[in-house]
Length: 424
Image: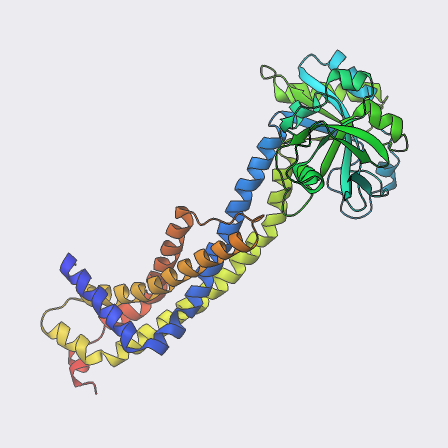
């Protein structure tokens, strides 16, 4: 088929759509629904995947965490896990001494507000006051100076982080999240001012970079960080301890991780035949958890899209069969003047593809519009349509047109020209 014939068949297909607007609209509706769901959900998931990846990079690609309990706590934990021994603040120092592959190991503890976890118990809300301003539901964390290296998300925008001097002298100093500082001080410079944290006076020595959190959850903006020594003095009831350690760039991550596990097992006197009584949380934990959560969403989208495309494909087949019946005499005339079976087949197959592609283009535009609306209305969900999924939308539509349009096209090609010319 020449380029001119392809162009002519495309124009005929578009004219056929315009001539039967309602019928054509109902035909492509299924394809529109299928492609729209694919594009919109793929845009949302791809944007979230990028956001999750940035979050993982912000935590640190070679940073691991040790905790007493699993990080993802769904439902009630078995009693064997709940009765595990608590980690000790000295465990981090022990790891630094016995595992040379580590760049650092640091302990930290947290006093969360009600409902804000990370393994901590429920507590009275943490509260910060300055003058007549008050912020509650603050997440209070006690850390060592190496904590900022362990989790780059906690980078300081103003002032400084906790120093070794602050830690050794249990100084009552605090680094605040951006949202807390903005609520308390407004346009004033927070550094050097004294706030009342849970009734105790603390000097503000720094403010973290802005970080609202993940999907509306707690981010660095909601944190107040104080020296670990001061935290232990004022909140001895907090027994849950966490350890963050980072592996040296020249060390093998797998080997270093195994050395840490062996050191912790010896320290906690775990028998060789027993499983670990602690958890090692890898830096890609968030990515793996997200993949598990989105797996069901991907399956659901595939089912909806498949049903929509199936309905749309049947509609394309139906409209093409009607078109073949309505244009029987035209087929007879074309065959009488020398058109081959392949020409007739290609003509109707191309028309079916045009119908399907029209639905695909509308579906892509609607999917992009939904992704844009989600991005604007819910900034924490950074939906973004990629060229890959636009190409996939076009390809899926064309494939539906070819698959469901072949039978009508082949039926048209096999018609007897004499019977066609006598058809009324």
